[in-house]
Length: 348
Image (cartoon, rainbow, N blue to C red):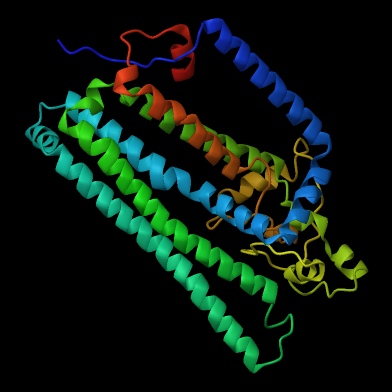
């Protein structure tokens, strides 16, 4: 008779876990409340670090990773586990039964194709950025190097972003094949994907991903809060600094010696600063949901390109760290036959 395994947490007692959880939540709430009233000052503090190349590159890397963690690693892994569980329990059809018998080959083919498609997309995007950098730089050497036709800070950021994308494209593929050959292949050979009950954390992670990003989308449209870079430097501030407000916002960043990823930035904005709890054009935001492509802000003549709160990248990282229990609890040597109250709490 097949015995289902579950997960084991190495804690001295359930009370220790409850205390740890309570303290963590309490500290998080306190930091959230305090930072809410110092939001703009905290942003200004971190913006100053962009003068240092190390922090600038680190910001680009973490920004890119925030976009890649879920589609490159979590999505294919969890979908594969869920599919294998389905095939294990639905073998009444000949096609499904035959598919299950060849599951190892199919998983290898799936990961290979998925990795190649993702790599092609990332590699193509990164090489285009690098090529555009050299093309724009060469064009600038022919004519006068003014803000109208070149921004050195813009080009250097485009080049740095392209290099980061290029490196990450190789790292992502390597990580996917490590997951394939170190995680899936050994367990497919002895059928431990289904017997070790991997399905539970896989489903939890997928549901958490969907729920988290639904919350991000809904709250972004409720708050309608502009990005900090669009709030801090409006047309009025540009004029006070003696800059041409009709030029792109990169001019002001160059003025201060800062650098940033300018994707999507247009002219200087008159966007107003909003606290995270203050709704900004709530009804218009929802109307713009149904325009394809989404036409946010253009009719406000604000020209800021994205909404600031809450951060989808932060949700991406929280999802990533939440999967730590997936890799820990599903180790066969750590399995148990019963769920305790802590394990049930985590799975729920």
